[in-house]
Length: 390
Image (tube, rainbow, N blue to C red):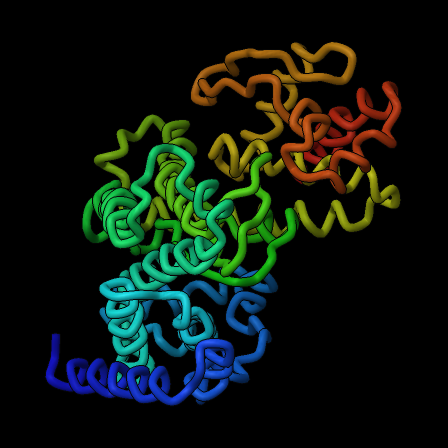
């Protein structure tokens, strides 16, 4: 740790000691207002995220180039980093002992990063630690803490933090080694972007070159369960690893072994994916029936996100035509798709909609489609892909 970080750490610690001594227990939450200081009004503009969604290829190129050159990305992530420190400040009253020290040190590191610069790996590592601190903050409620520890994690909060951080760091390490070093954040890679923004199916569809890593300070619903912040972030982290293989899946149609694929080849595929995602989203917007639009978004999300298949329009058409042959009464059946798409698209889409996997709102929309309308959705997807492939 640098001398400056040590001094900042010491200043935060002394301020906390003075405030704790001066304020009665019943008024401890008022410390948050004092400590929040420059983080009190961070806002929620999400300008960086919106630029990626509006024009994914052109917006991601300068970021990728900065990363390749080893330059700081703290400007792009300043809103996210300030929000992290704001949340930690508000939660500080619920941290004790070594956990409080960890929180203070993390805030000092982020302060330094905002002032002096930070790499994308640092930003993601800070986001990872933040998600664990938010778990511990929510754990002030014993019933919630029991739920957070589901899976056999330690009851001691420092032990919980250290155990789960190690697991998540191992996932993060795999992000850096899945491809060769120059391809990790190079032209053909999928960039991990931590964000507090709520993303729609359309947002995800438009940004196949981005792996969004969700941040939250609350328990939240995803993939059919209520889960803590670290599970939300960690789940997306695991998707990042698998999404990175999409370009190599697509490239296999060329017959070129992955080890012989160049950065330029990977870049071609990723740019193709982004263009395809934007064209799909703009086509779907023109579909008049909101129910059908929603279900098509779910189907495509199952394809490119849950199954990590390439966003290549011709390969998507081949895939869905094959699946339609195996369809019965509007539902997908377990099947292995042909050739390079040797993935099992097993009992998903409508079954997940009906089970509440995507939440009650999506389930209610699915329930409004009758049997014939459900059967027709697949044909509409194929019609859309056929048009876009012309």
